Structures are given as structure tokens and as C-alpha cells.
Amino acid sequence: MIRILPDTLVNQIAAGEVVERPAAVVKELVENSLDAGARAIEIEIEQGGAALIRIRDDGRGIAADQLALALTRHATSKIGSFDDLERVATLGFRGEALPSILSVSRLRLLSRPPDAEHAWELGGAGQIDDIAPRPAAHPFGTTIEVRDLFFNTPARRKFLKSEATEFRQVQQAVSRVGLSRFDVGFVLRHNRRVILDLAPAVGDEGRLARLRQICGDEFVSQSTAIDESRLGMRLSGWIGLPSFARNQADLQYVYVNGRLVRDRLLAFALKRAFADVMHSTHHPAYVVYLEVDPASVDVNVHPQKTEVRFRDATRVHDLLFGAVHQVLRRLRPEPERHHQIQLAAEPMPAVMPGYVAPGGAAVSVWRQSARLDLREPAVPGYAAANWKPPEPMSSPAAAVGASDARPLGTPLAQVHGIYVLAQNDQGLVLIDAHAGHERVLYERLKRQLADGGIPAQALLVPEVLALAEDEADALEAQRDTLKRYGFDFDRSGPASILVRAVPPLLARGDVGALLRELVGDETQRESERHFDEALDAQHRVLADVACKSAIKAHRRLTLAEMDGLLRDMERTDLAGQCNHGRPTWMQITMAELDRLFLRGR
Image 1 (tube, rainbow, N blue to C red):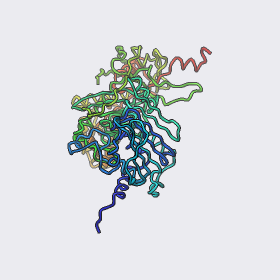
Image 2: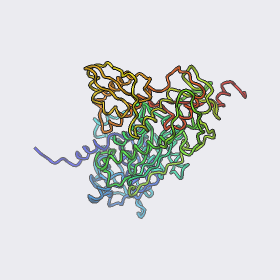
Image 3: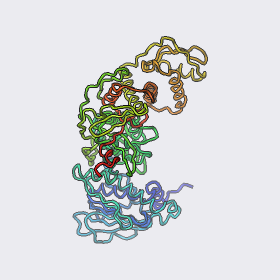
Image 4: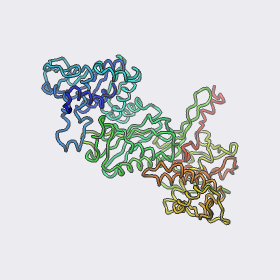
């Protein structure tokens, strides 16, 4: 028998989608406050939100004759036509949050518009009380109290985690909103104790303070600003440097027209942009704001409004990937902003390189290598209706600074045939010769490929490479593609190929080992195809060629060869990391050396 469900049950079903936990309630109510024009929002939580959630704002408020409508399903002031739905410019628009929350809690709504003599109050437990709104004492704005969440749905209440866990989710929800609206002040209390006090941000210093409070000092010091506009879109915000790689994706914020989203397309584009400078098991950090025409993005695809769909996904992907990739490529070594090694009794942090943006110190002319040719010229690499992203501050990591015209210094010696020891204005620099040379060669190969292809060098004696038959099949299938990388070979038997030419860098290398690795990668990734597989395959080939061709450990270099390597690294994009994301150099300052030897004590 088909029947129409009662309103209370319908609201509870909707609550299952919208009210997942206390943090979801906080998110929905804070977004309502922002849509109401609030400039100060206070959030009070008790027992992780299970006992009490109180949101107070100074927004426009709700008139007395509108209070009951506000607690009615599919009632909203934010959209009134299909055209409005096509160009959503507010955080909320479904009209489901308040009735859904009311259906699973004891809710009290107090509000006073600016033109009202006093406030009015309405509420209920599971449903609206059968009485008219009552006069109440309240300043201009709105307060919503949510008590005993899931009191009438005990099965769902059992799914709540510990008080600490639930509050941590609440704090994260407030932090996410705080990064979107720098112009609004937020205060978060838990069990009457202030946890977050985010003052409205005014100017660069205010934004810097807000960013520090939420993302931490290290992110602020190890990030660079980004601001790129093209094709009617704008991407701005802050990008964590490769040295700030994370073991988990816990510091990634992407906002589309002021709305925090979790979008696989955007996350993938950003991770791709870091592919050349970060190990595949690590995650980049970023706080970025994407502004697009609201008509070009559909925000009505998820009950919690955390997912979006773009009309032109490829264009959006290309903007994110291209803009971030170019910012990373313009960064250069800068010892004064380098994460330096900590000596003596102090804890030792992860040592990673620092950078300086374009326009920093000029690089002196390199001395020609006596035996090893490391030379390579340097190649340089609207808005939603009622929301504007915070302007990126002048990031410390992007500041011009190094006074040393040779940031990586002058080479002094090698350490066990692996590391180059150099001296610069700040003290000592240690360089991993193989890792640094690997990056130099990788960038050279990429430029050659972009210019038409990598030249091939014929072998004096063609080399027969014995393989498994399936490996030979896989290589033969990739023959035309590999020609662009400088390889020329023919099938010489069921389980062998005849290699006639290789990239010049591999003329004296182990060609067989490299081709076996390439065919192994191809077989392993056969089931992992995605729309940019060609580009990923290209990078794998070039990275493998560069790795096999780079200076090997224990090879003794002359001072001229070391100097050539350092100068090339200074002029090479992304030279702070090798192709696998490992650091290529580190700084030890004079102050650290003095502390080690107790000088001045």
C-alpha cells in the first residue's frame, strides 16, 4: 500500500542526510548566519555538541511572522525561481537544515531584526510547538539553541563518537568556515572554555594572524601566495611549499565561490601539480579559493553541499594544475628561508629546502666543467555575487632575499663521494649530487620533449635485450611512443628486442635495466588508467632516464664539476627536490656551527 509519509518522518529522513553529527549542525547554522550578513558569530558547545549547540550572530534576523516558516521544510529566502537555483550565490539554499535539525533535537529559535522593538522566540522538540511566537529579550540578530541532539532517535545517538572526537569535528568545521570569511569574527567555546577566538582580519597582518591560528606557524612560513586569473576564473590563496609535504591530506582547503568543497577533480589537479616535487605517498598543503561564474557550477549535487559539478571540468582542471605548477616552477633556492638543521640538544625537524620567488638574487656565470658537462640554460618557466576571497598576503616564503649571488655557494669538497660540501654567506651547504643532477637532467629532458622530441644517439653496436615474451610484446606496443624519448628498437625474436639507439644521456648507461623498468611500470599500471595517462607515462619515462643518467654515488668530481652542478641547480626549475620528492640540499648556518662548538659561551 502506497502512502504519503508524515512530515515528522520526512524531516527525520532528511536529517539523516543533513545532520550526520554535531559538526554538521554547526556547519549548517553558521552558514545560515553568514547568509544573514553576520559579522560576529559565537558558537557554544557542551559535551561535544550532544548536549548543547548554541549559535549567536548579529545578522539581519528573522521577523516574528517568519519564524514558523523558517522551521518549515523547503522554506527559504535565498532562492525563488529556477534562475536563482542556476546561479546560487549563498551557502544555503535547500531550506532543509532547520526543520531537519528540529526533527532530531530540542530547538529554540530567538531572533530580532534591526527594525523590531524586541525579539521573538519559537521552538519545539521534534516538531514546532503548537503556539505562536513569544516575545523575548535578545539583541539584534539571531540565536539558535540545539539541545539533546538525537534525543528521539536513540539508535543514531549511539553512533556518536567520544566527546573529544565530536568536538574536534566541530572545531574543524569552524576553522574551515573561518578560512573562507576573514571579514567575520568567530568565537568557539567548549564547556564554557574559549577554544578559538578569530578576530575579523584587517589587512595582511590580520589575515596572517587568522591563517596562523588555523593552519599553524609552519604553514605560514612554508607557503607562497598564488593569484591567477584566466578565462573568466580566478584562483588565489596560499600553496604550501614542497618542503611542507604531509603524511596525510589534513591541510587541504579548496573553496569554490566561498563554499568549502571536497571535489576529486580539484584535488587531483592540485596533486598533479606537485607530482614533480613530492613523493607519491605524501600530500601537499594548500588553502585556495576558486572564483567562477555561479552559472558555470552546480552546487545542488550533494545533501551537505560539499560537492560541486562544473560545466567545463577540463578548463577548471587546467587552471588549477597550470597555475600551481607555474608557481612551483618559479621558486628558487634561497638559503635564508631554508629549513636549517638543528644541532646540539634541540629536536631535529625534517630538513627540507627553502625557496625564493622570481626576481631574487641573480646567478653568476658558471665555470665550464672540465670533464662532466652539466650545462643547461635557464628557461623561465567572476566572482560570486556576494562573496570575495581573502586577498593573499605577501607570503614570507615568496620574499626576495638572498644577498649571495651564488645561493648554493662555492664547492669545497665531496663527502664520501656522495655529497658536495659548499660554502655560502650563511655557512655550509650540503648537496646530494645524484639528486641534484637528477633534477637538472629531468628538466632538460622535459624541455627537449616539448621542443619536438629527445634526440636519439645510435649505438656503435646494437644491443640485443632478452625479455619475457609478454615484456617484449609490451615494449613493441610502445615502440612509436618511445621513439619520442630517443629510443629506437625492433623486435628480433619472440622474447628479445634489438636496441639501435638511445637518448644521449644513456649512451653509456644500462639500457636494458631501464627498458625492463619501463615495461614493468606499464604492466603494473594497466588497470590504473585515467584521462591524463599519457602525461603521467611521459613523466615516468623521463624520470627513469634522468635517474639512470645522473651522477652515481661514489663518483669523484672535480671542483669545476661540482661548481657546474651547483650553478645548474640554481638555474633549474624545482631544484629543491629530486624527481621522487626528496630534498637535494640543506643549509647549516654559522650560528648552528658556533653552537655546536660552544663558541661565544
